[in-house]
Length: 299
Image (cartoon, rainbow, N blue to C red; front, side):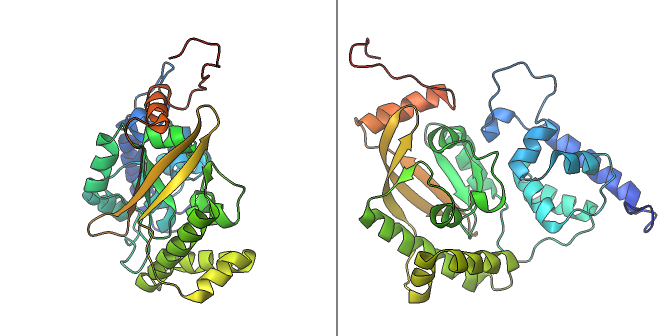
């Protein structure tokens, strides 16, 4: 039954099956594995609805309606976001789309589905900040140390998670570039985005992102119209953390096999102050850190 009470008599049953599957998948997620704080006593196992809503970038009310079978026709975009937030396997993702009676996104569209290899990297590289982006450079996954270093992105959604949108349109984040680093970053990232539009010509969201960036940023438009070719592979960044201060880090970008996913890894040279600060952030996470002053006992 549709939400207005009219339609397919079997849709209500399918909606309940989808809701049951979503509850099961939500209950099995350990909040710590998705970078959420777990310090206080939790009344439920797995993710709370509010936490799933933050990770997926959709409203808590809509998650409730889906789980209760009152929302029976979620969009492909919502299903894709839920599959990513719930860390579904390829078989589970396919099953979810079948329950929702929706076709899986075609290869002509940008995907945000994490492959098992990428998921394994996130789970096993706890001592290194790791984040994952889709072909449009929109953040889709991260580990706890990345959240501690760059700021918790779970409250962000849509374009606020896109690297180019935040760089050209939104207020500055913690990353600082020299003029030379900024020019190199913009050239490579825009060329990478242009390549994505060639690989995914039917993706309306990607076309809309490019169009809005061109309209709102003359600097982006000039670089886009220059048709320079390149890829965003490696860079050096200074990240200004509000509690531990600046960290000069290497930023390496890997492309996941058989996918368009970008894996961004931040590392510090051994023996540097940045390496010490990363170790401190690994211990403290997103908690406030107070560093000793010149007259305090050193850590």
